Image (tube, rainbow, N blue to C red):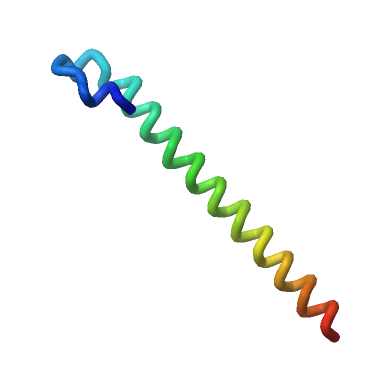
Length: 50
């Protein structure tokens, strides 16, 4: 992501874009995994209290 600090940004645009999209995808995947884990945990806790 430090490619944006260079004066000649044009030659670093594609790697910057790939990194940016990759970070966004990784963030979305982590969010979905955490959401599923939290949902499964809360369902398990509600079943255990019955």
